[in-house]
Length: 293
Image (cartoon, rainbow, N blue to C red; front, side, top):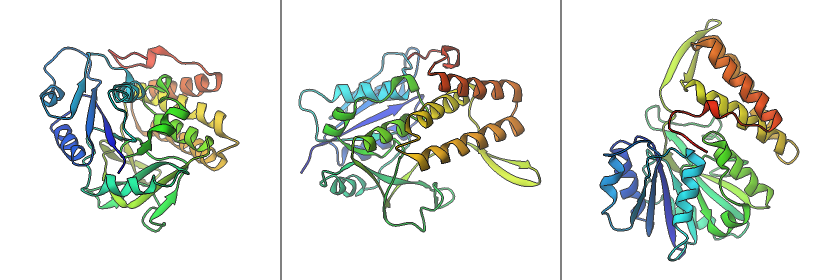
């Protein structure tokens, strides 16, 4: 059996983090918790330090999602690196057979990533449209970070998570690079991963009811900037994903500037993101307080 370890990222975690770690320990030899919460104690993650098999990394800095994932992977390099690495968010409590089920896919050397299907427990449905009527096991261009199981040698080959992306599209970038390296990305919908997309609000737009997840203005910059970078880089090797992402970003821009205040600053954040993505630049002004890349 391959050895499996987990990296869990956290930011102002609540009691769900403890449940996430306890569930992961049932199938993982080690769990590294990287807490990005800025500032000084006390932190909920500190209560996990004394648990056998758990390592907590917290230095009061917010290094972003990519930086936290990379720190967790680096921690797993000693004393004995695992064969497989599982990545989790602080709200992703695993089902009993999820990890072993995903690990079976990775016995195929052509598979670089195996992932569950994100599931909305409140509404009793898959998050991604078309999942319910699709095949149980589907090849994907990308999957979300939380729940993905990766062979360590693949991670070594394609390189670390992209720290300049800070938070958004970190998963997409990694998956696209894995596919470019010649490996397959699989999603197994038989394994459901409860996952939160944050607070969703209903709005009226042109007489229609539209649901949206409220993101802070600074994040709109990274969504636009990083998405634009990936479209430029993968428009030839992932044309369908690039086209769909371009349409998604256009829809997001229209939605955020039409129904979410303050409209001016939110529109400006996305426009600057599009500009910087096209030029390959990054604006530090859109990092949240206490964050660094």
